[in-house]
Image (cartoon, rainbow, N blue to C red; front, top):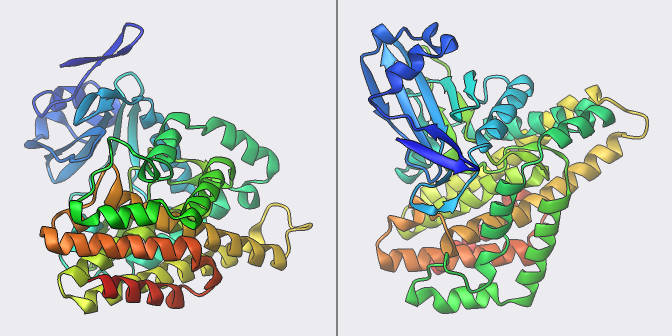
Length: 410
């Protein structure tokens, strides 16, 4: 099947049937996996914007990700397939500064908008594991260190002023940034066709989205997202964008942040906050199911992620490109800024998942009575984080209070 992008441009989509021929036509791939050795091809993508296939054979595997020119469930909603180029650029940059924490790129096909990356079939999406109540020790810390290495290595601190400006110019990603600006910071706070609200949650949503303090805080957070070009952030670092493999059979633990197609130069706190917001969603699920132990453990991940981030950033600080006026006080001040940005971003990311487009299985797979209570708790937690959260400078205390709000709603 061929799809048209615009201005007469088109490209052929991958299918289970044509993947072997595609690999055969790409020398960089056929050297990794001989098409004659391929024993199977599986389509594994379940997202909104891409086709994803895994080809296997001779004990090897290869993943192919192709960008669609529209939203998968709504062909009338166009999306630039050029986003694969942003993802490739981010994976290469992140791979340099945070090796082992993102997938390796094998090939980039700019004509057909295909990325070939290492096969991670022996990993699982972290969201699914969390929904099952599985605990994977160390993942939250790995992600904190990942964000820190990216925050330092792609910012003025690691690159210096000129290289930072050049990298920023190369990474401008307006179409996908606009999606975040709309879906996270705007649509949940207005009447919009993307919003789906259960009747029993109508008053909860109206109270949250109509609160003047919430609206002011969201507006300020949106300004931060749009104007604070600090580092080449992942841009969509939720628990569904993390693949994990537990340590077993002599293999070490593995954590990989993937799908950085929303990457751009933005506020570092947004990536931390995206994780925090998803911890809130999963804790709400745990409490709705009566699993208070799991909920408490998940909320504890917020502190683990933050401590790993702050410690790794501090360890990298002596290597800053320009130490002349960037002393220890600046580092402490910057970490404080990241923390405040993360609190607001976490609230926004949690709230959008229970009001607007692109819901999460943490909440959507609950029976409706439990879902109503979980959503009520998430909105209460989001309001607290936006209006009062930045006053609490320790994540353990901050998310302890979040846990109380979620428990009261459950």
